Structures are given as C-alpha cells and as structure tokens.
Length: 574
Image (cartoon, rainbow, N blue to C red; front, side, top):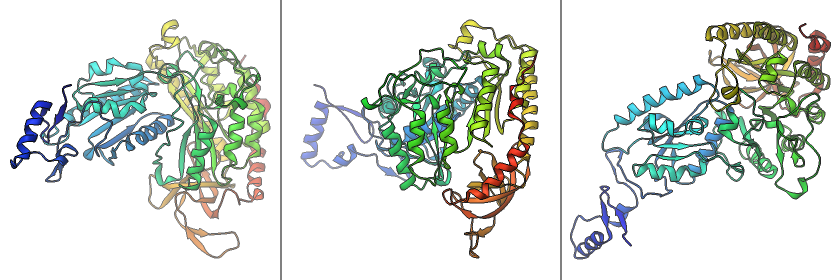
C-alpha cells in the first residue's frame, strides 16, 4: 500500500521517500521535519500558515469559522446545530470575517430577493478569497441550507471558487466536506432525509445576552402549498423525540438562565412524536373545524398539545412561544392549554396568505375565508385578549382586484398586532411553477403590497392604542437601537416596547431600586402606541411567576372593552 504523508511545507512524500528521510534523520542530519511538524502548522509572525489536511480528515485543526445567517428562525437554529458539530471537531468560532478561515452562509430560498442577496454576497467573498495572501490559510466558502438544497450543482457551476455545499439534512457531514475542500475539491452533500432531526446534537446557542433561545422540535413540511418551496428544500415532516426537546430546554433554563424559548418548525403545531411505543395509537390528529389537508390524516403519536404541556412545566418563569404554525392544527385542546398556562404566551401566529377563498384554493391552503374567520372567533373566545399575527402574499397567480380587496377587508376585520407581507415570488419545483401562471405584473404586485401594508399599519395602530394606560409584563432584550438611553423588550403579545433606562423598585413595597438588565422581567405602564411598537415607563422589577394576576386582569378588561365584536369577524364581502 502506498502511504502518503504531508510535510510542514505541504509537500507530499511517498512511503519510500519518507522512509529515506527517516534514515537520514537517524544519521543525525539537522534541519529535517520533526514529529510535531506533522501534527500542527507552525505559527510565524502571528500568521497561521497553510496546512493541507489529509483528505477525509474530520479535524478542524483550530481553524476559525464565521457564520452569516439569512432568513427565518429555523436558519438561526441550523447555525447553532452546524456550529455544535464543527466545534466538536476542533474548529473555533470567528467573531468577524477578517479572522475567518472558513465562511459559511446559512441561506434562504423562500423568495427570489433572498437568493439574490446570497449571490451578491458570494461575489464579495470570492473577491476576498482571491486577495488572500499566499502565506495564509486559504479561505474556504460554503453555502448551507435551503439555497444549497434548491440549486445544488448550479451553485458550484456559477461560483467556481465556492468550496462546500450542504443541505439542511447534511450538517453532520460538514467536517468531511471541509476536509475534502482542503484537498482542493468542491464538496457537496444535498441529500434530504426522512429521519434526520439532529435530536442528539445539542445546539450551541449564541442569542444576544442569552435571554432567549430557539429550539427546533420538527423539520420539513407536508402541506405542499402551491407557492411554497419549503417541502422541496427541507423535505418531509419528521418530529424530534420529546425527551431530547425537554432535555435541551432544561439545560437552557438551569444552566444558561434562558428566560424565553421559541419552539420551531415549518409546521410546528403538527408535531407528532412516534419514537416510543407508548405514543402509538389509532387516534387521528384533530384539525381545526372546517380545515383539511392534502395528505391522509395521520394516526398516533404524542401531539403538539402534550409537548406544549410538558415544556410549560419545566420552568414557570420561562416564557414559551412557538412558530410557525398552520391554522389547520389548532384544535381546542391547544387553545385551552395556552389560556391556562401563564408562561405560554397569549400570542398566536395565524398565517392567512389571502382573504379570498378562490385564492386560498389556488394556494392549496385547505380552508376557506369563512373557516379561517370562524377559527379567529374561536381563538378569541377561548383566549380573550390574544395577540394575532399573520402572513400575506400580494399578487399570487391569477389574483384579481376583487381577490385583493377581500384580503384588505380581512386585515380590517381581524386586526393583527404583527404582520409579515410580501409580493409573490414564483419558485421553481413548486405546484404553482408547474400548474399556474405568474401573470400579475410586478408593478401591480408592488401596488397591492403597499396597500396591504397601509391597511395593516392602520389597524395595528388602533389595536395597539387600546393598550395605552395598561401595565404590560416585559422581558427586556437590551438597549433600544435608536438610543442608548432607552431599553427595548417585548410583551406577552410579542409587540416591541420601548422605555427609558432607569433604576426601578425591586418589589412593590420595597424602597430599594436596581438597574434594569437584559433578561429581566419588568412591569411597564404604556403611554403611547404606533403600528410597530409601544412606549411606556418602567414601574418595577418582577418575575413571570410572581406577577400578580390582578395587575394584568385590568389590562384584559381594558382590552376587551374596546375590542371589536367577534361577530364582525364573520362578515364577508358579498
């Protein structure tokens, strides 16, 4: 067998040549390579010298990795998973691009604009790679996540200096891919899995100030909405075992002092753990009334309501949120649990996408306008004062002016606290790409989007104004982005709250005061409101567990006294 070794200078020696070198060393020839030269590159003048790793080597050799994360919260969690895997293989984390040996972009493919951002960034990085000095470790560039999965070899063909591609289910393979790249190859793994959940990988959370964390509970999506690329970039739905989720959240609470956890999934409330025999049954998954799926109703498994129940009991002083759900998966048992548990936020993301039943059918959403509004009524009946957010698409295939007007009217009727609105961007591989025509001119899409945003802001201003005079429980995130003299945080409804930085009483009847820090809970009296945020004055420190219900009960009464009648949500355009 021919053995291959690497010298300090990177020169390859065959087994015969290395044997000869060994004999010369034994004879006392000075200046030959020592044992340590084969283990680690020398550090000279503060620069790390090039050291070609053996092909297939999983060792990071203390190289520094810099991550840039684009897109949704799942990509934030993917970054934490990828970093956990690389860290265990000897890689170090770079805090800035200048000190990086490896740059990994965690990407999004939901809209064309998101992908164009990555193409532009790759041009900048390849230019930086070309400028790398000969004595330095060659810069390696990798694309991870949805864009890698969607475009596959097209990325490698267009960007010749791109080194690594890894799809969302291939992060365990990153050390091997980077080792291959060290050998001068372009390395790729974009295979999707029916089983991968990274359940045994503990993410390395790097959230600002450590007050909050994202925890992935499932991956993939089976809904096959006609506009959506996610099933093709993230694969089929599979849920992480409940035991691993609970263990991660316990560690976040007990060891890292995290005060807020957001459960993540592409269809987070369709969670179904079948990893244990005791979870298996013949019961079908309950759906919201009037909703349907494109796939056969599944049986058995530990459902989202049971998981949410277990998670909420881990730490009564930890807020629990979840995103992104599908409206079909809100049976009463989930809503009642949200209402009953003080630490489950009374905030629900309810993606509508359109206010037109005709458009909803074209989108393959599995519900009508009427069924959606009945769900809104049921949510507000079970969870009074709940905060709602939603997603909307402007200018989907075949959308008429009447369809658009119905979406505007839905915004007015429901009145969302938070909205995510976008112009439609057709994606290859989707049902719409193969079966529908992207026939709405870009200028019409833009005009309709602007009208949706204007109506959303108008209604959000109204609904946020109802909170003026109320006392809100705020989890502090840090300094306001506009002023170092102000702090920012979010209330239970996930609305941003800004208030002056000051010392406040530790308790209601205590004269002692203390400064407010990120991760603190404080009570803030709201003095003004806009469509995007609330402003107020901090009253005192508190905890989620010890906040008196009587203090917040007044808020509920104030909110309900000005809330539109639920009946109005059932009105539809003729």
